[in-house]
Length: 91
Image (cartoon, rainbow, N blue to C red; front, side, top):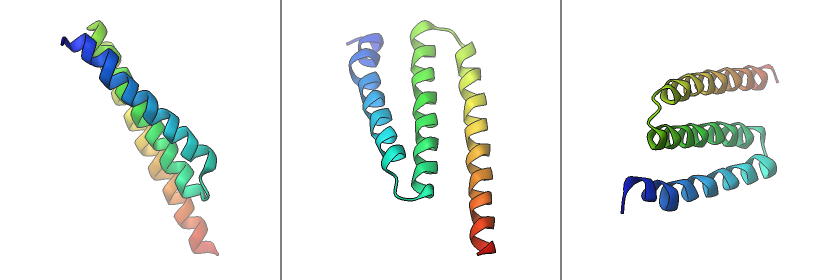
């Protein structure tokens, strides 16, 4: 089994199923916290897909894009959790 075959038949289907499950949690999330975590998970899985594509095509520039996307996702999650904490303290 080559690395390309492993990516195509093992890793990408697992990532696809993960994205579908995360979208279900984003849609059905009973609270806003569940939706924020689901959105962060979708971005993280997207970073994994970008990384797999980068390795398959041997294009290193996509790894830089994945790192920038991870930083933006992290900062967005931190900012939103700070906002939710401030909102709950005001009540």
